Amino acid sequence: MKAFLIRIFLLLFSVVLCIQLWIFASLAWWRFNPVNTTMMMRIDYWTEPSKPIQHQWRPYDEISTNLKKAVVTAEDGKFVHHHGFDWDGIQTALSRNKEQGKVVAGGSTISQQLAKNLFLFNKRSFLRKGQEAVATWMMERMWSKERILEVYLNSIEFGHHIYGVEAAAKHYFGKTSESLTREEAIFLAAILTNPKYFEENRNASALKARKRMIQRYMRYAELP
Image 1 (spheres, rainbow, N blue to C red):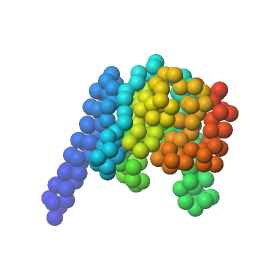
Image 2 (image 1 turned 45 degrees about the vertical axis):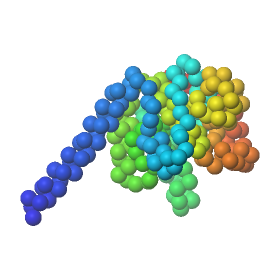
Image 3 (image 1 turned 60 degrees about the vertical axis):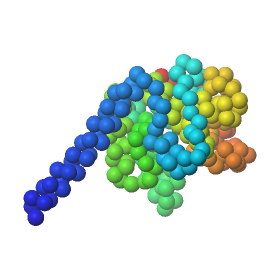
Image 4 (image 1 turned 90 degrees about the vertical axis):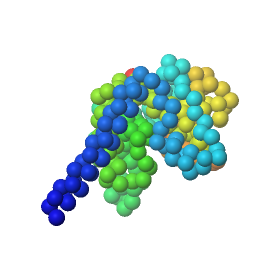
């Protein structure tokens, strides 16, 4: 029995080690190369293979500053200051969730969201959060903040099978992400909380409220 348990432990350890090595190797490669597919894109495609993924890589300097500021404002106002984890934001989210008796807020940073999108499934679990933390820790030490934001902007979901700012700009406004106006950037940043829903419900009150918030605080956004 003891030998069996040891073999099980070694097998699980080997699997976990292989996953960490895969994440490390991927991050090392993506440090200098475009990210053309993510776990979220693969899941979307596997779910509905008849519909192609809309995605096109766009370098950081060719993305509208309006959009960068709007996304940082909407998703992670302390992005340039933390090292992957916003502990104050996490504590605030936990307090809100405790008050409501359910999950109504998250404390994930842009780095954490990117780690999840690149490598993990969307199902909530302690195991997934633990792996997300490890991937985030590695990413923050291997990539610059500019690179993290660049990959995030190129991989985030903006609607049904729509990933990255270039595909989003073309889908919603028929233009490149470099030429987005302030109002267009605010709209794209605002839909990130629930992109598939807001793609079909562009006049939703929740979307309007989020747009007002971004518009109010966007001037204070700090970029890497």
